[in-house]
Length: 188
Image (cartoon, rainbow, N blue to C red):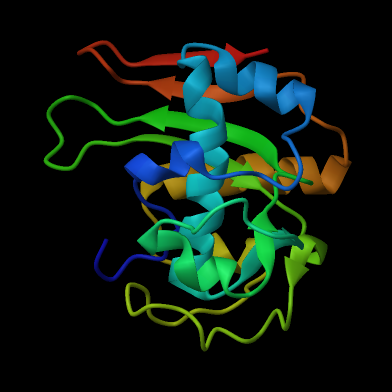
């Protein structure tokens, strides 16, 4: 999204479903992700999130480990670090599907991971590909003042509320716009 501040993200690649995870997703998040989604998609969502963060920021979410076989091309640079992608610490915090009339549609899941889970220097973005510019850490209160897409603002508000209360939400918000009628649901 040109001239917008956005989360790192992107599409799941076909190979993501076959990527081994060093640690599984916690059961609460797994159950919430499984609602209104094919079960075989869950592992691919986590692997895709780890890969996209790696590609777009150069930050590594993984655990030391050996790959059972040669990694797919999109995963070679990640595997070369000696890590497997890890779901440890992932929290599924939001889902949104854009309305049908939009020129660019998505069905996005948003995850929160504590920065302590990142291996390496948190301020070293030198491994990032050239998709994003101005990579930086910004306090949420300041980030919410930037030029954000609507959905990014809503997700940041949810995350800020969680961080302020330190209380895990009882459910995950879901903006479901698959049809002409917009629905706001909760994934319990």
